[in-house]
Amino acid sequence: MNHEEALKEWDQVIEPGRAEKNYWKDIWRYRELFYILSWRDLKVRYKQTVLGVAWSVIRPVLTTIIFTIIFSKVAKLGNPGDEPYALMVFAGMLPWQFFSNALSESSGSLVGNANLITKVYFPRIIIPASSVITTLVDLGISFCIMLVMFAWYGYAPSWHIIFFPLFVIQAFACAFGIGLYLTAVNVKYRDFRYIIPFIVQFGLYISPVGFSSFVINEKYRMLYSLNPMVGVIDGFRWCLVGDPMHWGGFLVSVAMTIGFLWLGVHYFRKVERSFADNI
Image 1: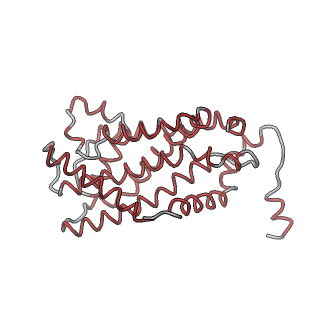
Image 2 (image 1 turned 60 degrees about the horizontal axis):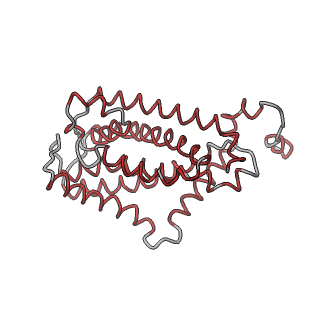
């Protein structure tokens, strides 16, 4: 590509409706910005911290220990498989940590990049998307911890692990859809950021992280699966430790994930034009 062709590729043509028509093409066009924002968010997360990457190890491990003691020793809840209770809890902790981190990071991403948004054009969806992508690093770190726990307990993962990437995609879709919606709402109603930690904390206790979803009465199972993270957590456990899967409830969770993804993208695109004014 010569110099003139390179300049032509980045020419900005001002035309009514052009940005709307080429919005999804522009996401690919600005892919380098996506890489830059993702790398910047990753460096900022671990820069000038005392524990650094170790915090991504300590937090899920401590939570797993607490949940194992509370739900296994105190509440005397069992698990449907033959794996140690701590493995079952940590398998559920993997997607939940990713989901909660993604919501926390993406919800304030637009406000944190106000200067960038008010000065140049690019598809704004790139900003929350880069925030969610960076949380995949924490998921990778936690997965490595899971492998160490397998070795510690002398427990081999289920052969279902070959389907693990599919459930990671489902977890990403769920976090991205809900994150987009919360991000857009947070721009207009700035005090909404105080509600998000409560939503995350509340979701932790109504999702089957510290216990198996099979403790839920069968007649309430489909209703319980309206929480999309139920299917994601069950899927992770089915892949990693071979716990049984409630396929009816899983399909409901998949449908809810698709619904939240559509809602998030639709609402984000609807109010996107007002971001520069509201921010």
